[in-house]
Every structure is written in C-alpha cells, then in structure tokens.
Length: 162
Image 1 (cartoon, rainbow, N blue to C red):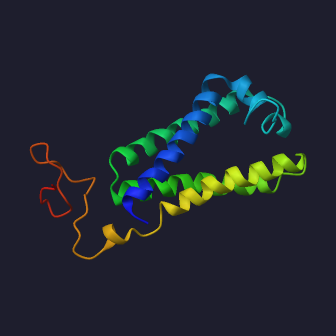
Image 2: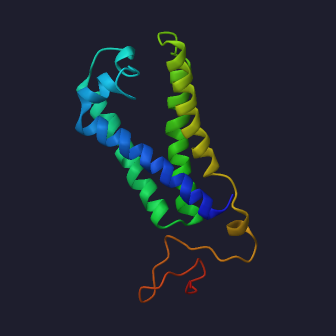
C-alpha cells in the first residue's frame, strides 16, 4: 500500500474521530442517548449515563483526531505508522470488548457494531503495512526529528528534500 493511499486511510480515521470526538465531548447526553444515530442506542444500552466517562471518550477521540491530522498533513512513514499504532491499540481493545458484550443488542445492531468497529480496526492495521515505495532501499525518508535547514525539510542524512 502506498503512502498516498495510507494518507486517505488516515483521513477516514480522522473524520470518524472528529464525529465521535466532537459529539461525545460537546454533547455528552446526546452521544449517550443517540449514538450512532437516533433510534440506535449503542451507548445507553450498556449502562447508566456518566458524563465524565462520555466526555473522556470524546477527549480520546479528539486526541486521535489531532494525531491523524498531523499524519495526514505530514505523511511520513514514521508519522503514519505511529498513527496506525495508536489507533490499533485503541481499536483492538474497543473491538474486542464490544464483541464480547453484544448480547443485549438486536441483530441489526450486533452487525452494525461488528462492521463499524471491525472496519476502523482494519484501517488501523493498514497503516502499519509496509510501504513498498517508501521502504525500498535507497529511497530517502523524511526524518520527523531532523531540523529543517532554512525552512527546507531534510531526510535522515540531513540532505534537503525536494
């Protein structure tokens, strides 16, 4: 998968993080009662309302949004892989917990949970796959820790990038 394709994946994850993050952080009661859409009760079915917990979930997603937008804006191999790793840690645990607690949902919502949570889990994994063009020997990589020289990005060897 190319770095450009991974950039699209990062953008999709960023959009999902923006929707969930803003909704949960800014409108916690609405998120609790209406997520993922009015008439579907994926959060409220799981237990009593806890504003602190819902707002914390919003903050988590907003933090993933910031990381994802950084990787989308500056798509280095390291930035994309770090973003994928962060999303994978969250999504793997999130997916597993929900798959083990589907009993209280109707079939439609069980399928919706599995598809939506499984989808973002797969997207996380895609960001960790090798990038043939970027991992090829002799192809210089941007070093996100390297200082820019007169505003010009430099690779790991300090050579200006074009």
